[in-house]
Length: 228
Image (cartoon, rainbow, N blue to C red; front, side):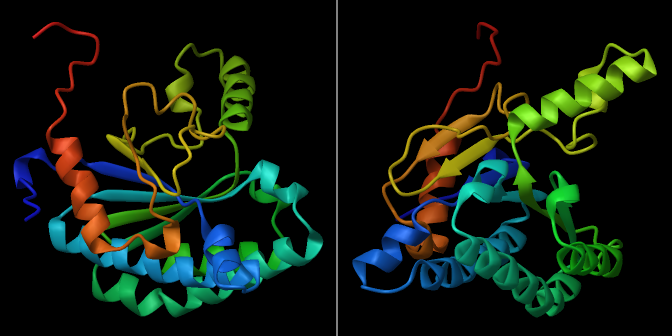
């Protein structure tokens, strides 16, 4: 039986959602079907996080490198994200969830940006949990844009200029599908994050798998470079 200790819960859990395409291929279906099913996993994790009292969850949904995928897949992903944002509004409002998108939004279409702005505005008062979607994001882009802004401001605190300024660094990063790398994701912010890698494909990652990862996190001895 999986036991989650409340006082050992992370403040911020982030996810690299990997395996949607493989999940679909195993079933002889189009890759977008895997992404569609992956939305159900996001919903399940969101509901479980609210129930547990976790304050921040974030999902690496679309990297800057993903723009190199086929035009059909990129277009399908953007349409899916727009539809998902609209469909999840009741969940956000009913549970006090603030919705945010972080990334290079200049590369997103006007319709996607309009949908993001609308949802961010409608959920701005959410105080129970913050849900962040990383779209058109890369860690190298984030550090680069932060360095330029920091230099222009004459500052020496890069943390204040990262796209994640004001968001606590992740305590736990979970990556699905057996891949064991961070893929240019939050390169600065993940410096002392605990990693949990699982072979489960993202569309199959639901509450039980989440609780197992949280239990693994609770067993870690986090020293942040210090001696205990």
